[in-house]
Length: 179
Image 1 (cartoon, rainbow, N blue to C red):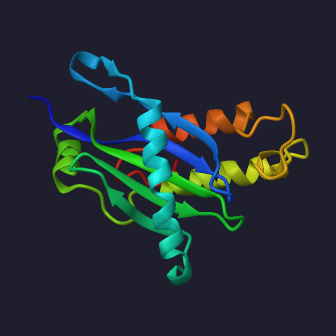
Image 2: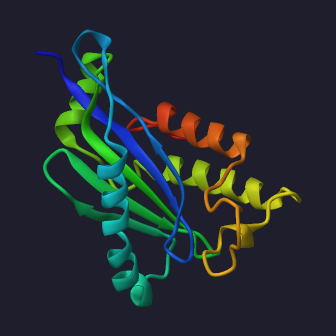
């Protein structure tokens, strides 16, 4: 049996009003390099379940890194990050999401994740979000469920932002220094 290492299963960007702004799913890589699709509804529920943990930890947190929000089982765990604007970034990690490319990488799967392993991914996501906010054509209030009227979409539609989130999710592995 091939050794497996952690990979990102899902990245969720959740607005300050707890509305989903963007959800990206990343398939698990199974034996013989087949991709196992993920259930978007199940991951939407997972992301939604993390919101209570953000709220409970909010008064006592001084940093943006909320760390491990909760582990659903021995394979799936949710990690959180809060931006200065109140937007929440959630990364769902599948502890057996990809096949280890080398025997050295397989040791990571046995050891699990360390505290700072997801920091490069969160930094890349926050940078992508800041660049999105710097776009003069992006209006964050278009994503406020209290202000949206008519046909305006609540989800982020920026192709550049979506590409950056996809790149981050695919490039991350435990031990990476920068993305």
